[in-house]
Length: 274
Image 1 (cartoon, rainbow, N blue to C red):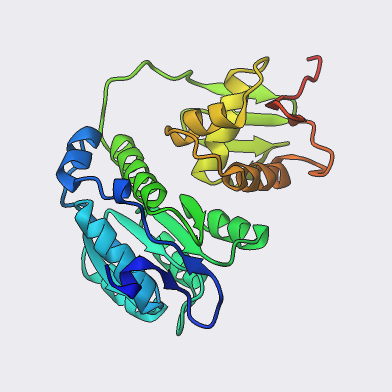
Image 2 (image 1 turned 90 degrees about the vertical axis):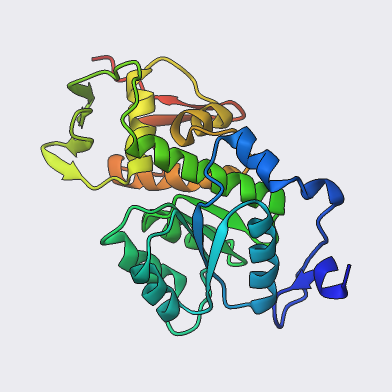
């Protein structure tokens, strides 16, 4: 193993990405067969650091993905418009066009899953990225096993949403929670007659609590229900979505009444005595 293969680092920083242990290198065909995934899923990897791009691309190629690479935001837009992709792996700190600007542009015309990877791991960046329509966020440095698992989960969810499958019918019609009206058929929410602009994840979060008004949900249960995947322990993803949802539905987000926090346990729908 060469020095570059053993570890790689971001330019001009002291953050090192350790070598991946041998058990990381699971055979791609075996993984794809276990996941029931098409080995030819195509990813757009948008990363300006060539060493990181090389390492991530090499690993994901061994996992059975076709990886197309862009090194700045403008190049990423051209590539995205040139062919279909199953998922975009997006860094935030890009030259020419930022990752956030790229995300805004493609969200106007595509619902392709977007997974943000960035060393900018502050809540503001997470909130901004997820608010613009990113599906997930993983902070650098990250485990390559976790990265591959999140990519596969995001593609699997997108495929499930797109395909007509036989499932137990969801509750139909309207749900009323105090001043909120949740239209389950049209995926819309209004408050005092005014429509609220919720993202897909925010809508499904609210729906989860509204359909089960007396149930307390742990973060693992929320992740399993809304993201339809195993919980990786990254509380920030749920925290950011919950905060943004509260900013839209609560009169005072710092003192929420619709979704209550039970510290050390989870969340539940507020009680209004109606």
